Image 1 (tube, helix red, strand yellow):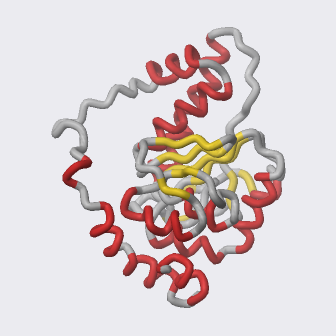
Image 2 (cartoon, helix red, strand yellow):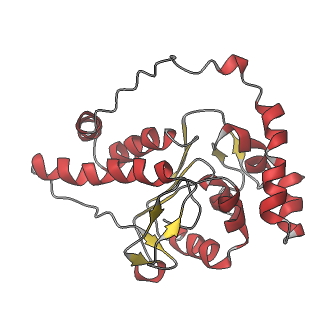
Image 3 (cartoon, helix red, strand yellow):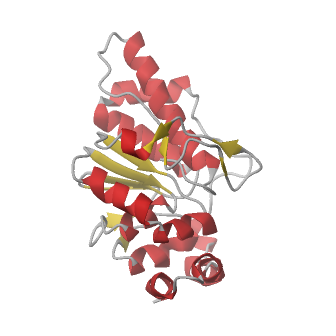
Length: 228
């Protein structure tokens, strides 16, 4: 799902994995079960939180019952979508029939804002974890979290991990590994992995309150929900 202001990698990472799954299925002679589409409220290109703009070829109403939905995240623009009834209503609608409901980064806040994660374990970008809790979910500080048919990924690049898990869930571990090989997802960052013991999630969560205040200043009810 595409909306204005999102983080491009939140969308493109899982999109690349799922399109890769279509290719791998064809290579292995497996009858594809899924076809990937990108949907939005409008087909015009929209801004992202980088200099690039992105357009979806398909309207929300054209895909009323997807088997799977993946919701990307972002910063203040994503929080503003918490007051977008068209988007939240669409999520509630597709939730009734979807096999898997997934998100990347703060996309889980939109799932929670639509009432889909009430009492469920989920993850999000670590700096926004308090908002997820206040919207009724239970934050779990993991790269990706499954709770029934809900699959949530942590911040930005974790969307690739979550999408590979989604690919395995829809097909098999072997096909998911083939997709991973195809996109050469074998991260070795130059500074090593993150030392989470040195990250104060709560301190930095305080700082993103200003982001919420900026994004939702015109909606004091939703802002009060996020700030507690």
